[in-house]
Length: 91
Image (cartoon, rainbow, N blue to C red):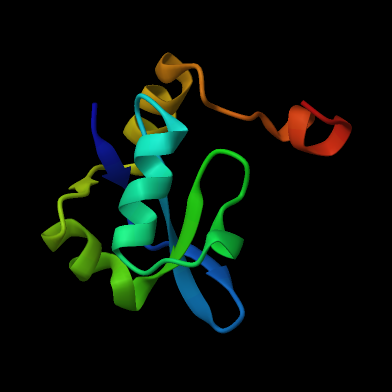
């Protein structure tokens, strides 16, 4: 059971964003995010979008920094992954 964060590499709104996920359960993810002051509106079905300036703080708080491919692999293995198709057509 771990909270995972990838590199802030996703551009939007003039900044780069990272993904914060759990490899086991969404309650764990929501609790970590709340404790770190991440607003619930940053949650996007299976992950939180977090701005690059929060990355180091979240790692210091216990998030495990891993590459994007490994993050997706572990999210899929957990059964929590929402695919692009599910996002478009409903899960």
